[in-house]
Length: 297
Image (tube, rainbow, N blue to C red):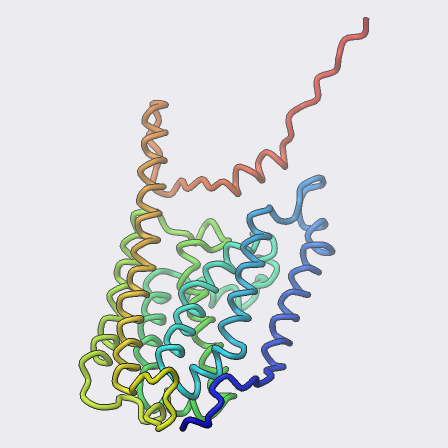
């Protein structure tokens, strides 16, 4: 086991192609299609959307390529768990924040994809799909198959990321009509934070190796198979839950600040009225201040 090269470089051209393809499509859409899809003089994307996209594509690359993918697939389940948390809780939300409304509507179109997507992106079906997949993808048979079959592994990732995109649309999606109110967002995320408790606790308190595919003699950093699965369970339960709770806290303070500002002006907003800085930027860009002509001497 001492001769195993845990960090032997393994190329993943399918990941490079995915990252390069997404980047090229985004740049093409913003530079070529965007100027035709937005009012004249309005930038297709905001600065914050550009930054969100760069962050999202870098996180997607890091979580899917060597060494994270290879260590998580062959040696340490805790790395595999961390990879899945990034691909479901972070990357989809960040990429949705990077997507302008005009581009999202162009992608989904007006056909069956749009109809089915809107039904599935509602809080109840989106949350249920996300919760069920969270449980199913930790079934030992699924985990062992994914670890031994690279194509199946990427297929699982595709299903998880797709379900995660649906899950995050009610919170930070580019469609205003599909976003739920801030109090509803907090409840929605709180319920989701409970789901990982079941498989997380199972891994922490299980006797022996839960996933036989990780019960190998070669141990990276000397981490035993029992410690590996216990840390993975703790990551799923504590790190994932804490991340969602941090977002809940941020939403709460934004909601409280919005109501406080409205109250100070004698206005009581409804919970459906969500004003973001991106919306403010777009409004100013679409309606610039009028130019005042200087009087002639």
